[in-house]
Length: 201
Image (cartoon, rainbow, N blue to C red; front, side):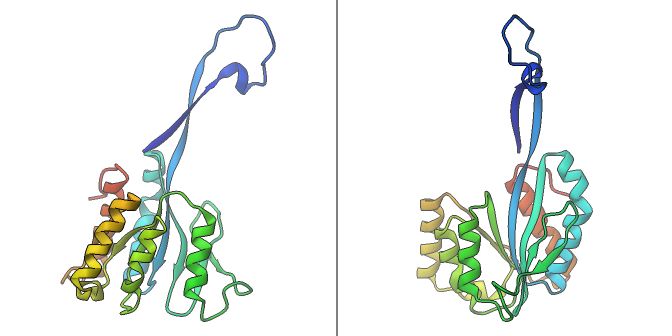
């Protein structure tokens, strides 16, 4: 998706005075940004980040910016430093090790990022129990966590309701395939398809 803004050449050059002049409109392309909170930076999470980095220039040309705003393991949270290249740093004053899960989720909610996506690439049995909370805050969720398959039917019905109420998406990509690269590619392709872009493969 592309966000386009029309700007007259005269206004762009600071010429807003009187008199007649020809408006020549230019299109300023603003990338569509997806802010990802990634749970799990083991082999799978690392493979996903690596594939996104490899596609970064191509995707930016197509108007899509995939930003891993926060990545976490079981103990620490790392925050995007905001540079052009992917790089992260800890915020130990606010999020000491081990980090406070609820405080982190509140931080993401308060940041009011557009197009926030939770990716659960962890093996946590507890994290799937927070999916409803994520959806209720307006976050989209993609999970490859096998524990999500054990969620009771009543919980799944509530997930579906939250998706309807909040206009968000919940997708399970749990696979028997143990190849982390294949699973990571499936996640990335799903993100691109939802953003209206052509899959990388």
